[in-house]
Image 1: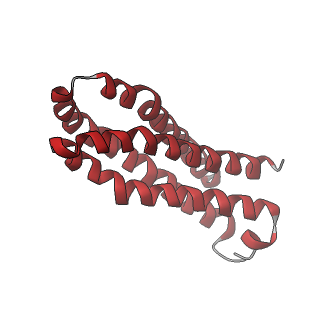
Image 2: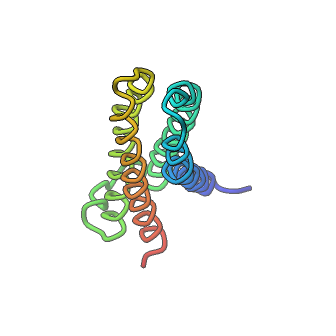
Image 3: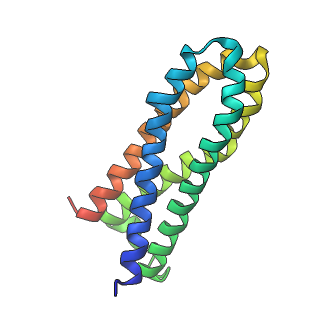
Length: 156
């Protein structure tokens, strides 16, 4: 029988990897394809597509964050939290978690506005430019968080 720590760890890793993959799909496949579409078809495509991909990202973010908190609780019992400020491992985990939280806040605070802005034709071009940038920046931030967590876990 696997331990709860292993289950939490794998849930955290798999959801973070899926989140990273979802951002790659957005940044390098879907958004470039949308930019090639005729302007009149973009709004309809995005109002059908974007809520689904945004909902997937929201679920992946939630599972990643909750499993990370659960893993932290299982490993520390939320005691001796000073280890996050006094050890290399703790600082890496803290930095990775902070970056993940930052991009989660951006997702929940900003990206929800894209769908309504995209549906309105007058803001479509500006929103499309933002959508070409935001997923790539998000990819960099989530990748950095992922790398920091891997280094912390392996102790390099």
